[in-house]
Image (cartoon, rainbow over all chains, first blue to last red):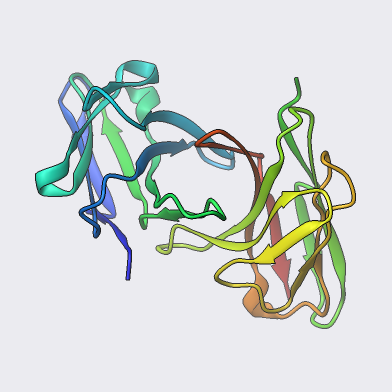
Length: 114
Length: 110
């Protein structure tokens, strides 16, 4: 079955430190890949997406992600964490089906310490 | 554009009650969907629609009903609420490959 796995349900970093949130998916076929962010009691906001072309994708708020087909990964990074980055992050995959379903990872809660 | 809007923001129901969660979008997107979010499980697709008059089931459709009479609106109906339906519900509309989510409805079923 097609699945999306986010390694680590909780990640804690210090302000100014590197943020690395991991996402792996089960299929070797290049799908559409997304990262969404959810702030407390809010909806999901699109951070960035990979559809085709350059494998390093830049998003909002200084985040970027690299699509690595050989590793079936789409890890999210940010060089320097800010307190405002504290949120829950979801990796999602569109397998390209006709009904456009997104398969989500379990989510990773990012905590940023001063 | 208001984007995707959802009402109500929060609702408490008793077991067996019915209700409708409203979703609307003003972007003229053909594709709309409903997801539920539960802790540790990400979001799961309940129902989706590829255009007015066309709906279909997602992965967790039991206990829910949808209709799509207009492009703008995609309501989700709970026929007889159960405690297992306590969740946060998100509506989304899709343009090309990207889905845009509403702010969500928090539902508590007692």
